[in-house]
Amino acid sequence: MAEYELEDDIIPVFLINGFLEAGKTQFLQFTMAQDYFQTEGKTLLIVCEEGDTEYDPELLKRTRTTIVYVEDQEQLTPEYLTELELLNNPERVLLEWNGMWNQDELKLPKDWEVYQQVTIIDGSTLNLYLANMKPLLGAMLRNSELVICNRCDDVSDESLTAYRRAIRAMCQNGRLVLEDKEGEIQQDMLEEDLPYDVHAEVIQIEPEDFGIWYFDCMDVPERYEGKLVEFTGMVLKSPEFPKNYFVPGRMAMTCCEADMTFIGYVCKAREARNLETKQWVHVKAKVAYEFWKDYGEKGPVLYAESVEPAEEIRGYVQF
Image 1 (cartoon, rainbow, N blue to C red):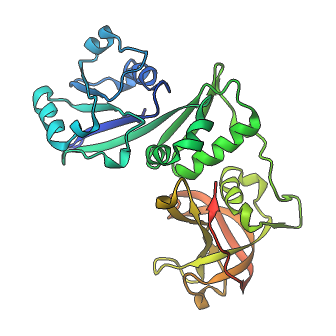
Image 2 (tube, rainbow, N blue to C red; image 1 turned 45 degrees about the vertical axis):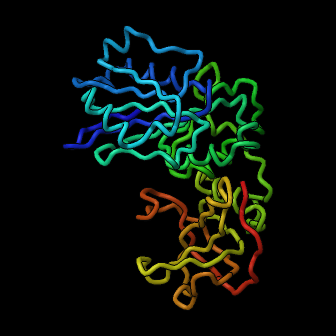
Image 3 (cartoon, helix red, strand yellow; image 1 turned 120 degrees about the vertical axis):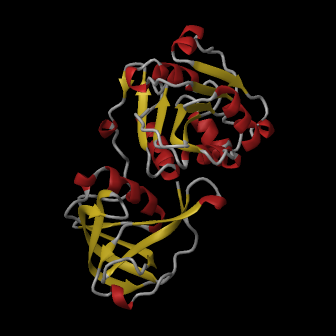
């Protein structure tokens, strides 16, 4: 986890989530023992489920950490958390979340603020959670800064690629780490089985492949930089965009219907001034990688060669 600076009157909360036996306790104990994570004040550790791994009493004593177990989500109210604050006077809070609880229902006291959120996933069982508990997984991933998918030893490259795509869809701004018993897996070694020809003169992106292209274009810039792509998308415009810029994209369901979001990349086109939001267009554009303020970093920027009216595409992107 990251180093942090304290703000006056704010208690930073480090939220560690994941399903039972994913490795949350091991991760927290490792982090608590690191030099960079030491602090002069007290730490309050709130554990919302008990797995097979127990916290080391010596580590808790050495790090001035008080541990509190919470068995029922209804107990976890702002009033109860304020009582814990008054009793323990912590400088920071570590919260080991129960993956079977809906994280969207977590309410913190006014002077508590989630400083960093980390999700731990067991790669050997991820397919079951994607199939049966995707809304809960999506709630945990949505605001995570770091996602660690461990125990990937017996997971095929094809499945790892699919997992990466699904996680990135639900956690678009976080860093994903894949691990096996040897350590971190180099993701650039995972070949994406792309449904389109990246060596074509113009890369044709079919409607059902838009989501795959969207993430691959961000993750593997060398595959697309300087190349032409062609696809159909819906127009998004904003008064904050510079003149002649818009975003052609699609509505995507990242985990469930409640999590619909618009995905796409900014595009410069002389036709932009005549376009309206929600209009459908067919775009042919060259891909560049430049800093864009809404990305907060370098990312794909499209330079249109043509923008033409198009028929609406029914449905939405799924991952």
